[in-house]
Amino acid sequence: MKITDVSAVYLRLPEIKARTDSSQDALLVRIDTDAGVTGWGEVDGCPWVVKAIIDAPMSHTIVTGLRNLLIGEDPMDVARLWTKMYEGTLYYGREGAVIQAMAGCDLALWDIKGKALDQPVWKLLGGRYRDKLRVYSSNMFQFTPEATADRLRAAMDEGFTAAKFGWEPFGKDPASDCAYLDALRKAAGPDFDIMLDVGLIWDATTTIQRAKLFEPYGLAWIEEPVHPDDLNGYRRISQNITQRLAAGEEECTLRGFQRLIDEGGIGLAQIDLTRCGLTQAMKIAQYAADKGVLVANHNFTTDLNTAASLTFLSAVPNAYVLEYCVEPSELSRNLARDPFVQRDGFMDVPDVPGLGFEPNFDVIEKYAVGSL
Image (cartoon, rainbow, N blue to C red; front, side, top):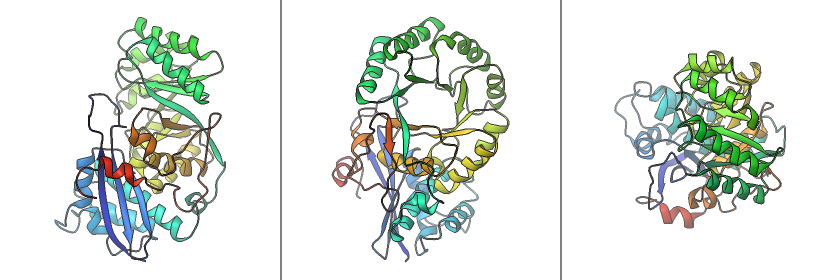
């Protein structure tokens, strides 16, 4: 079996709002083979940049687009092809968008391998520790406490037992922040888990002060309060708060997570499969496990990310919970032919060959930018 084509497909809603909401567009990676087996991956990054990294022709042997590197290769050689992509992009890669583009290809290769062997990918990873994952409803903060609390009530009505709220307009001042959290806790009652995503806007001192102020609200974790490069800040925070400290969605390499864990002292590593790829994610999870750190996914995009995350989290012993984006975007909810659903706060791990994602071509054709 040989790879015959690698396509980067950009999907975009008609209107892109100036919010930190990555459910508004998506970059899919499609890898075709001469055996008729097709694999699908996704990249949560800057779509046009990622597309250029995939489509670029060869400049020289270590400045090469990923499509050029993969065509003609055996897709079953997933680990070797990760190394080939890494070495073939050495002059302009090694971090950031190139690794993210590689991650999308890596997911598509694992999808092909599972389909070709007629096995779910979690079985190829060594088996699964669980057949379902507890899932939380992941939301943007709304622009009033009341509207935000309405989002939480909707999550409860759908059966979720946990919800996260993040980013703007939260974080401006203590009184406003407490008004939001007070409204959420009153709506939730004592037994519903609430997670907080601060959105990178504080320094360490502010975070420590706010965390103390927020203790009565019983937060399950505080996520990314400071800039991802502020490892000293993360270390200070981890040593001075009672809540679990979570971070990692901007990281795309094992080295990046090692720094966050070893220097930053985080207690929950949030791994985005569409930025790290499955090959790397397994190494990151093992490193976290060795350090006594839990892992969760980051997912604010599509059901392809959900499928990859369910596969990954089922196959590692230190998985904590599954993030699921509930923003009202057709890309996040309807991109799969059979969308994933949660029941009673849990989501089943796909038990079909590959990653368990089959595309809804009606949605892809509706939102594709350019030709497929």
